[in-house]
Length: 219
Image (tube, rainbow, N blue to C red):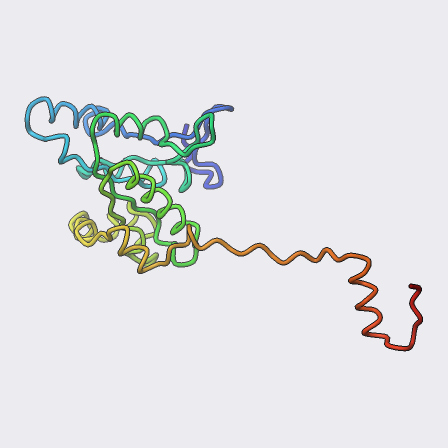
């Protein structure tokens, strides 16, 4: 269920609903994945030529599909991956189903606020690395336009037109190019802070050094 007026709660899911991606029902009220399937069955499209654009948000996915770009929308930048019962990373169910159909080309395009939100880069890289590890070709368009041009891909298309967005798609980064450009934030983990835990002997030595002969310590 979507909340359009209340910007603080645009989407609502039933309690216990697991993370997944959304495939729009458009155009002509047809599930876009079904539409692609019909094109493959008719011979108009080959499965190896199908490319899926992964973005964040249902409205962005609707906009992409309405413009003829197979787009799926996640419920958050981290919500294209989940974990199995053993704690291993896996694709969310709908992305896994698309992968199982033989789709091996993916593009990742999150919002333009990545310039001030490093989590967007981290999430992009993490998803791209996982898809690459299971044999997919991945490109990224995150960071190829500014917030002034439109925060999300739907805003960009509305403000600049679909042809301008297609030019963005043509300039998509490879994973290596993206990491070179924005830094591999996923692997660059912060070092844990040094422990402040000190023994009684450490404290005694420090006090002795500081106060010198002002105090007499018991041996």
